[in-house]
Image (cartoon, rainbow, N blue to C red; front, side, top):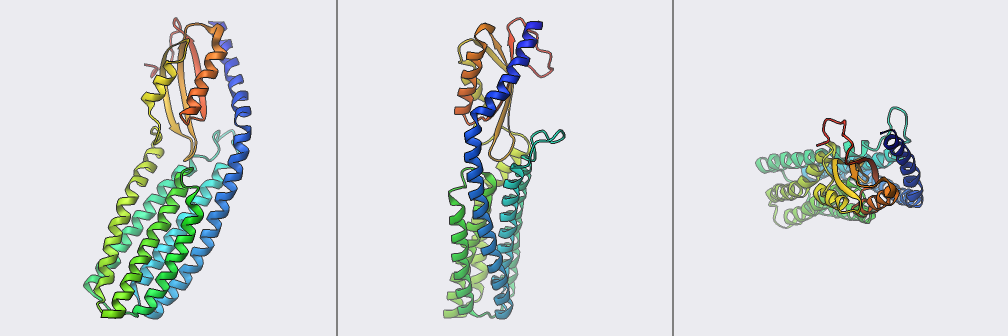
Amino acid sequence: MNYNKHSEHKNEDEHNHSHHSHHHYADIEDFNKGSAVRKALVAAIILNIGFVIVEAAFGFAFNSVSLLSDAVHNLGDVFSLFLSWLAIKLLRYPNTAKYTYGMKKGTVIASVANAVILLATVALIFHESISKLCNPEPTEGFGIMVVAAVGVLINGVSAWLLLRHTKRDLNVRGAYLHLLSDALVSIGVVVGGIVIMLTDFFIIDALIGILIGCVILISTWKLLIDSVNLALDAVPEGISSVIVQKAMADVENVVSVHHLHIWSLSTTETALTSHIVIRDFATLEQTKNELKHRLNELNVQHITLEFETENTECSDEDCK
């Protein structure tokens, strides 16, 4: 028993060293990519803040509910972009004695906030559209069309800046969806402006707003579900606990795998802890390295393993 405890302690130390060296160059690459994401987010924030001010000014000038609503939606985008930027900053927050994982979990909180804000924006679009549907007012069709067209351009450029980073982080994907949704809204406003300019059929703007709100709601629902699952420490999207356990159990020298937990440290990093029953401690290092290799291939980065013999009795209540 003393030998096993000593081995486990030694394994933990070796794991920390191996993990650090294995990810040294990966961390440098992630830092560079993180810097690129931050620059893209800052550029998108500046573009959208400028457009919100301009669009709101013209909305008041033209007495246009659609432009003012779109300006509010764009303001929601600015907040979403800021949350995404903040989340990336939190990823770099150092580990402390109190926050041993740093502030990585803050990215999950920001992701939930992003989804909620987007859904709240959809509610605002529905509210404004229905209000305008019930009480249509004359507006300046040509002016609405031009300003909204600029909005499509601004949001399109902003979304393009973030496009290549969307697969790495849920927050960036949330911001990207915000920008795409606002581009759709702006397109709807452009169409509404053209129709108003040609026909004075003011009600069309409200109908387009309701249609676009439905499209945004459908596209955002999965983002909300993914975010809430991360907040509840569910197994991350794209990772199967059944497949992970089988891959670990198939390693030579492994008898069984139990007490398996998989969760997200952040919107980009996955952690795993498990108890591994092995036949022979003489080949422990080889077994451990093979397990890490297979888990890394399954996109699990932070791995903590506790090794046991077949005669070792697990002391944890939830080992079974």
